[in-house]
Length: 113
Image (cartoon, rainbow, N blue to C red; front, side):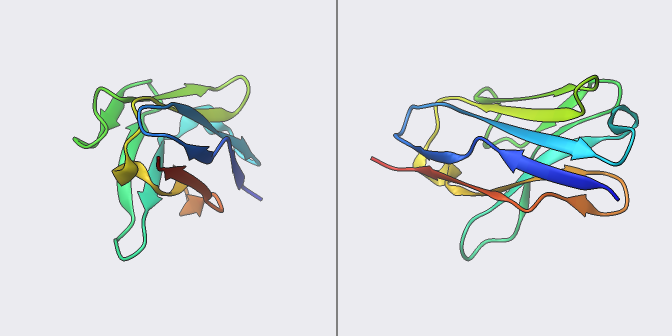
């Protein structure tokens, strides 16, 4: 079956950086759109960034210029490089494959002084 496993989360000070990874198995990853979403307490889950099968990217306004989404189809891995992190970026981050409603289990990112 399709599995998505996130890694790379943690705690960082404002202005710091983190890189999230999402290992995808059970499917030909390169054929599908993929992305990162996040959810903080009391808020709905929101799209952070998507990457199309052809490599095109889409970002939410809140992260544009600070986050970079990428993919390595040979490694079946999705990445999110997060720079200049802000306290408002604190959330559980989920990777998503646009096939069959496939989601990872989520990983915590905390930005605080």
